[in-house]
Amino acid sequence: MSRLDRLAVPALSVAFVPLWASGFIAGKLATQRMDVATTLLWRFVVAAVVLGAVMAVTRPALPRGRAWLHLAVTALLLQVGQFSAVYTGLSLGVSAGLSSLVLGMAPLLVGLLTPLLLGDRLGPAPVLGLLIGAAGVYVVLSDELGDARLGAAVLLPVLGMLALAAGTLYQKRFGAGTAISMSVSVQMLTSLAVLLVVMPFTGAAWLPPTPGAWAAAVWLGVFNSALAFAAMFVLLRRVSTVHVSALLNLVPATVALGAVPILGEALTPQAVIGLGIALVGMYVGLGHLGRVTVGRRRSASPEVRGEGRERVGIDQ
Image 1 (cartoon, helix red, strand yellow):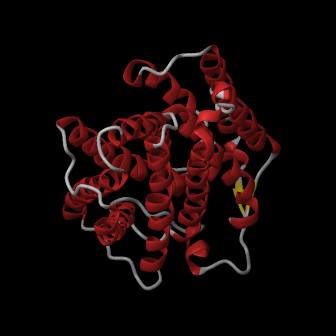
Image 2 (tube, rainbow, N blue to C red):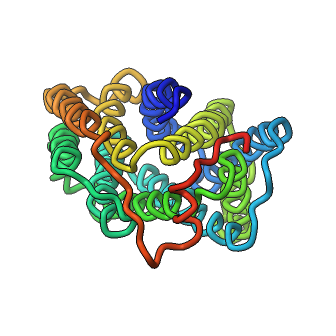
């Protein structure tokens, strides 16, 4: 790890958790004020504008060949798939905290699949850290899991979790050859194109109806889309997927605590205990990530083989 990485990784790790967690709270606020399709549309519009300005300054190289297809697939998983499911669940009454709990299972799934799909050789400590963190997020909101009023709506964040896990693994394996600013920008533009196609069939309003709805859309576009995903992809380039997984374990407890003053959701003893458990899981997992190594697979694609030789920064 270079000197720049030693400085950037801790800073991005600290910023990443609240940036990612804010999306659940802002998403709940947004879906209380406008349709899910409108929320998604303006999330992608704002993010595309912000990232377009970044690209105008950094002028990253255009993707080549199959990289366009890989970016489109990642967009469908990480952006359209994840957030359409999560926001629909929020609009149907699933709490921000419970949504983050279900999405918090994605790191465990990613961590367990990483050795099979990406060739990482994991020691027992990172896996143990992920399991402790998963236990923590269950404790945070365990009382909500038995809420019969949610019904089938709870399956929607489960679908979002599966899309997040699949998108994270796909981005890690096939996204190394494209500059991060270009990668996120193409994903947002792809997602925006999908929304523009389906909007006429949803019956949703094209514009947010209130200043509060506009504020939520801008927050989702700037902070939870452009900044959070850029930070995520930088971390995926420079450290193991388990590092990002350990950080995501903290999100449910963070959301539960933040939802108290913002959304009026009750702070339960489980939230405090679960946050402590998740912190222990992060310490155990991150404290041993230096032992994670990346193996070479004979069948690996050129993108994967190139990842071991060089790392692509934002401005490249």
